[in-house]
Length: 337
Image 1 (cartoon, one colour):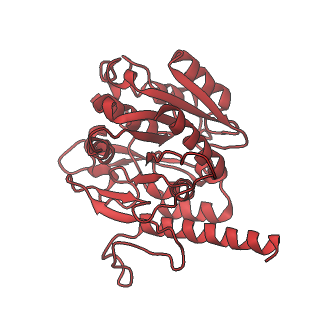
Image 2: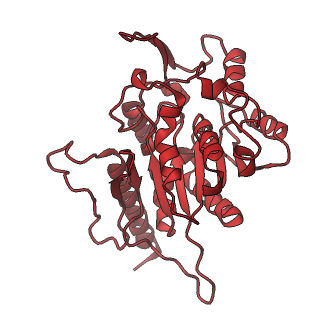
Image 3: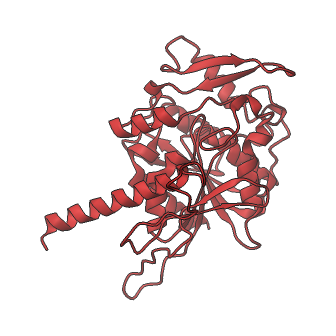
């Protein structure tokens, strides 16, 4: 069999694994008359993607590598340690945005849990039904809390997802090996988590600043109205297929700028959030948050934050540079976990 044919078979295998991972994230039992099984299997693939479960708190958790994980071992060398990566999406997105990175990590033998925050992805809630940032973050908080004794997870948050990571680190510092902020602001100990986002909104408040994104006031019967945000397609510099997927799946979200957890100055402490190792991944071609601004924020956090970069990555490296991001995450996990 020639090298060209082997390359084509390899690419086809990768596409099947990615599509299976995406389907597992998006399909909920009972939603489709054909897809009612809890586990999706890929025929003739030795490594099966996925088991869906509901944890004790009732949240839907996607474990993308429950069955028959692929074990890789170089001849004469020790097998690489398996890590548990917990992936958190940014505003308006869902677990679905990680399907490429999750496939690579899982194929390398790691455990991957991709979560939908409340009212995101396949969550049955609507944005206006989420009462607080705590409630929005609950799927992550419960997933980290449920980690078995002695196990530490590798948290990965994209963009706004960095706020969720910070809260989980504060609540469960003993269960987090390292937190990776992917094009995400790294909050300060003793300062509001909303600080950077508020500054960013003030500095970029022109009509063209949000690249087609929309703010909307949603009325609620017995409570004050809430403001929701929907990411515009111009914010997502993706290839044609990924852009079509994203525009079909993004949902309005709240930014929780008036929420007490986001605005409180004593929420993040040195003994909680500050006790966990942090890594900022700079996306060099980011148009929403320029790389120099990312580095400036990281520098202001002090020596406790390691900075890494991905050349050629835009604001959504899980789409633009999935292989590079996955390798970076594995390298970080090996260093800190």
